[in-house]
Length: 256
Image (cartoon, rainbow, N blue to C red; front, side):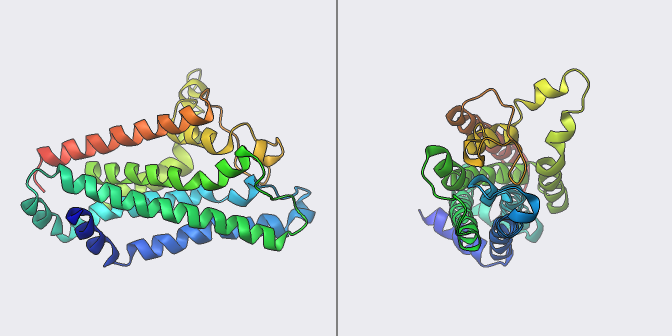
């Protein structure tokens, strides 16, 4: 536990977690407010899924936060002291991943429920009650998804080490790369079905039950993953674990 406490002091002594945390809250709450306020003009009534429309942008903030928790230490040189104190490196890196994942979980839950509450306040006549498993999964499921995304971010940070490269990768991949892969002739769609963020979208959105059966509109486009919701989360978790393991292995083999 002393390693987690040490990592907590290092993480929250800088502004990054606070800035990324505020951005995560705004990224989810602001689109929820917009979809609630513009429902009449857009002719798309608010749904529980539409309250979570900004989750992809919020996830980018979590990924960047997690990567910066690693690359910031490499940039400042404090990673040298960390590895001298814990020569095996693995325990302290696992502690860092656990801490960032825990913070991301809390951020995800707070932001998702805040977005849902904002939409309920602004659109009191809309049916936004959490009265099905799909409704609860798309809101409460954001925390676990963000926690696993944070593990991915730590893994990328360990592999890349440099802030600019890690941030660029973690911004471009979620917002563009998986969609671009679909454009590959013949194989693009088949590859896309098994990409990690597409899979975790299946966990959150299912078959559109929380969006009145709609695909897209004022909510996230549905996933074409062949996995069930539970297996989709497990698949994303396995991907995060492999990425973190690769990052830790790389960090142990090279100089800080």
